[in-house]
Length: 408
Image (cartoon, rainbow, N blue to C red; front, top):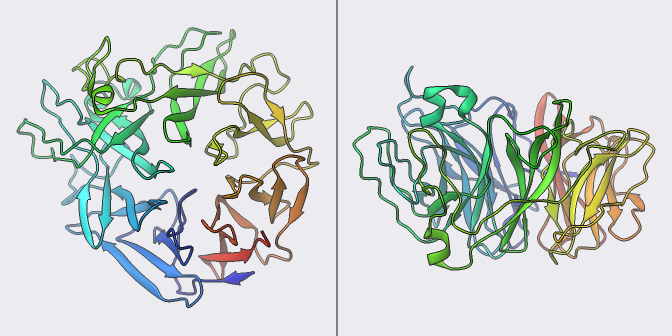
């Protein structure tokens, strides 16, 4: 094990794509905690030399965090809060955006349009946890809507969206908080405030993961027949042409004063898991995790309790069928997870240590021992070359970044 940051402050890794493509640098932000959005810089550290560089410094009282890296090129994307925040407009789920930095130049990812009729390709709220597709062309995110939040916060449902490289998008309205974006942005999930119990309808879509370059899986909250929340796994097939991204379906891409932005024509969410009758229904969202497909796009991994109530790793085909229980541990998996670039294994926290799980057998090999403090549950991330795995751990009162060799 090797500690790679030492400064007396916190260092926050995102749950995926934290390494530069050359496997030399880890990108991070400096929020004091995941729930406190007060960091002012996006930075990176060389894992071999310990050299730290500032990638971006937020201006005008704004704050930034949750950085990921394009897997193909040295390009960074992260959450950016409002400049010059005030009592009416400050950082919130529905008041944030993605910003991309490449070669030191920053530009907005998503446009914000707050004046009706709204602008196709723009959004009316805030985006969060921006993740590039494997080929680096698209960016997924979760979304909350300002327009419906102003009407009734209960109508502002979490959704999943995608930014496609077909901008720029320039809003035509006059609201002082509107701005342009480099990408064409749409929602790809569909939610309703009142799902029919026992149906495939959901009131929340979140924790998405890429399945190849043209599919996106996510967790959706269904309701059981008795009205209990049951998180299930869903998937959408995405357009593959500019025209496909820009073609509206039955409802406007940009939304209306009464409705959320809607997916493009032909984007229909499909339910993959049906767990309502299991002893422990639903995906195990008590451990926050993002669903993750292997690099081959043939298996989606997620966490779910076994019949004894233990949180295990499960696999399912993106085309459907019965999920397969991969791990048979005696104790809960304790963290988010990621696939090794080979697709041969996955990494996560188990029994307070960094564990390697064989993707075929589910056998566990521990990569670390004797942690002074347990690794953080938020992020366990392999380097693109597969030789290292990174995580966060509290050291002398501050969250620091650590790596170890995988031997693979």
